[in-house]
Image 1 (cartoon, rainbow, N blue to C red):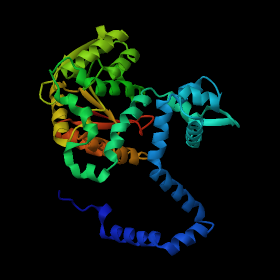
Image 2: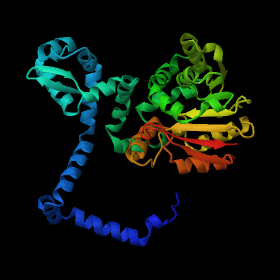
Image 3: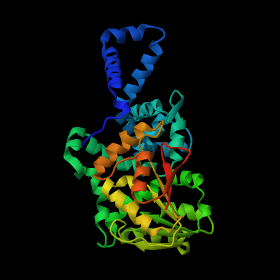
Image 4: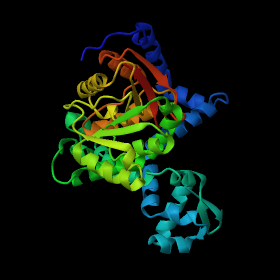
Length: 376
């Protein structure tokens, strides 16, 4: 791939970066900076950050063990002593003690007496986020792929073990849809993490008819139905996924308000007559060519003046850069499809697809979800 030179890659910047790196890598400078009073706090902070990054996998496994053993749920009912906890989670006292100390180090639990433990502030916040348990269990596949990151990167576009979660996209019309259950269930469980932020950030009430493309089991459209009266709702996804959405929406009491359309949004025409189309955590699941085709299909289905709302974690988000290209970049590589894109890159794709104007939508937690709206 040919790269063009920009001002950020100017010879001046390259020389400055090279000089900076020579200084920072010099052992003598490192010893001086660690001792000098004005630089010592910076050195310690950088060392802690780097250690946390290296140790991040261990921290994540402490979280996984705490969730799998239902430790946080146990302590949510009140403080318990070590022996009681060990019996309840079926782990020897020595192992329980080690887990509690590790969980306390990252705020999941806290010691309130010599032998008594309670739920910590981070643990309480974790329990308050629906879908976390499903995401943590799902990460086992990602971590298996990342056990050999070099092999994963060299494998190319085929993805790793995590790519098995993506096979439902090829299962249209096959069987009763059981093959889509794992992925669709995960998306439905984790959708509340972002649905509230999206609905709080955009005025859905200004629209008459909304179509949620790639809407899975209908978790997002159910959230809109619960919050926005009067708007007509429709969902488009593969037929097997749509069947699961119908059952879930009927069970939640939203069935009469939602029309389900089955099809492949890359190959089939989308139903018209909607002045709002939503893509919630869909675009970044696709490589550039199919993503552009999807945007063109949506443009063709929208009436003049209709809008497309895209909401997902995005690359180059200020304060959340690592979540974009660090986490989601590797996650989607392991999935075998898609990439995180910046708002600027998405806006360029939207213009290429024929949309006339785009604007950013501010969300309260960009680390979790950012949003952009385009007009036809």
